[in-house]
Image (tube, rainbow, N blue to C red):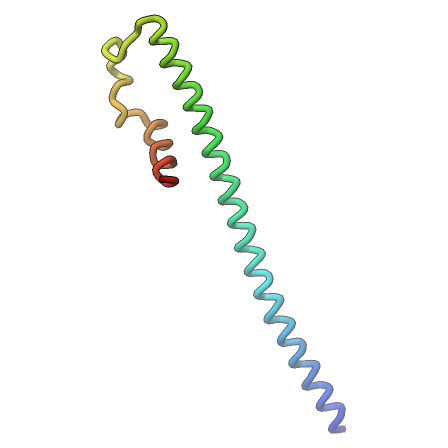
Length: 96
């Protein structure tokens, strides 16, 4: 009878240890999935930023070629009003 009780206690201890490790593993998997999602989101933001930079560069070069200056497009000269610029400025400043 005593041997049975001892085996039962050992089994219960092993079961509790397994549950603790399992719960820790689930938390780590959840954390890892969250970090992967954040990394992918950041990758999409960086890609969008480079596309915007490329588009803006092409626009500015075309305007220079056609002799269009900032005074000719006053609505676009106020950087504070340009939402895309501000979003990417914040993203870039994150890395600096």
